[in-house]
Image 1 (cartoon, helix red, strand yellow):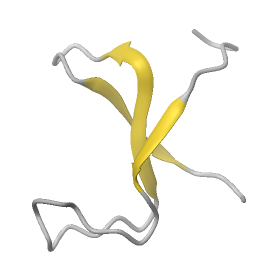
Image 2 (tube, helix red, strand yellow):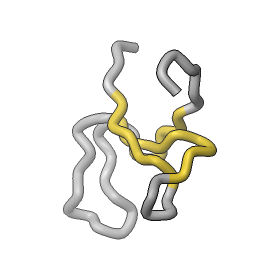
Image 3 (cartoon, one colour):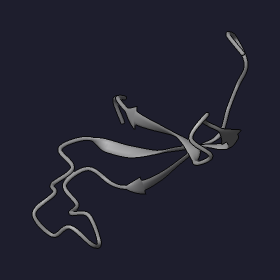
Amino acid sequence: MIGTVVKVIVDRPLGSYHPEHKDMFYPINYGYVEGIVAPDGFLLQRSILSQM
């Protein structure tokens, strides 16, 4: 996996709130790695730090 290019989907953009938990604020971009499932059965979630 190291050195592999992966596609990350941002589903909680910087400055947004969780759709169900309105008090949960996202101070960074947050999303998941497309096609990679974590041991809990959900898509692998990531915090995304970058300069745009």
